[in-house]
Structure formats: structure tokens, C-alpha cells
Length: 222
Image (cartoon, rainbow, N blue to C red; front, top):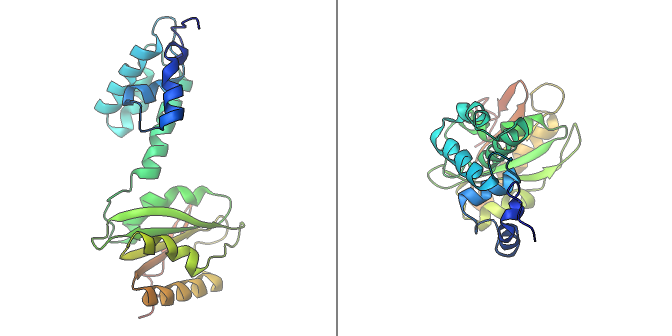
């Protein structure tokens, strides 16, 4: 194969090895190369990836995009591809071991679901120190309702030995207030949590305009 200094084809083994061994195999610089896909005539992809990685490591979160844009060889599409990958990683894994004690502290880790066009029911599982173990989508419904069963909500928290859960769901339309169905779901999940020995800390409704906490409004029995 003819070498091409502008693309990752200059390093054909990277993609092949990642496909064979998984994303934990390549170095950080090689992961950036996979995101960029290509360099430029002035800056080949390998040194470009190293410069990008330096900026990522040295820049505050709010300055990464403009600093990436100052790198020779980084056009808007490459800057946004890197920034989007970082944001997706933050959303997926940024919560690990984060401690939450109030509804306001939960919101940053589930806020993105407020933008969804259909209702998403989310379960946040925590250990005894209230550190987040996992955040997962339990079910996806319509624009006005999602149906959940305690088995679906608690199966994975039980498997990971969670001490507590916080449930959330978004309201794509209408006020950020609980419906009769929301209240009934909360009651059923709280009763199930008592049987399982997992503390049910809250049920939070989120929307683009704010949130509603059952706990804050004194609507959790017991």
C-alpha cells in the first residue's frame, strides 16, 4: 500500500489492531488519530494528533475548542469532532465515583436527557457513600409516557450491589410536574426498593426549563 502522509492509512495497523483488540489497546495519541482521520499537507496526522493531545491535557474545559482551532491543520470539522468525542466521553463516564447528596447534584449527569423528544426513564445507582456506580436508560417511551417495571429498574443495581438508586425521567412537553402515572410509578418503585433492601432516594422529573424532585416536595412515603 502506498503511504499517504495525510491519513491514518499511513499507520494501517492502528485500525486493524483496534478492531481486533478493542479500544483499550491504542495509546491516547493513536485514539486522537482515529478521531482526526487525516492530517494536512503541512501537518501529517501523527504529529497533529500529538499537538491535539497536548491541548486537551493542558486546557481548561471551556478553552479546549478555541485552543484546538489555533492548531495548524485543525479545521472546524476536526475541532468539532474532537470536542464532540470529549463531551460524549464526559457524559458517558464523567459521573464515575461522583458523590451526590441532593437533586441539584444529580442534574448535571442527566441533563442531556431533557433534550430528548421521547420520555427516557433513567436509573442512577449509588454505593453506600452515595458515589455514582452507573447511569442507565431503563426504557424509552413516547412523547408523553414511558412504562417501567421494578424488575427492569432494579435488576442491574442488585447485580452491582448498589446501596441506593435515584430514578429520573424527562418531560419532552408539558409542565415539569408529576402526573398521576408518575406518582404511581414512584410508589411502586419505592415499595419494591424496600423489599430489595435498596434505598430509593428520589424520583426526579427533568425538562429543558428545570426539574421536579419528589424528595424535595415531601412526596416519598416512609
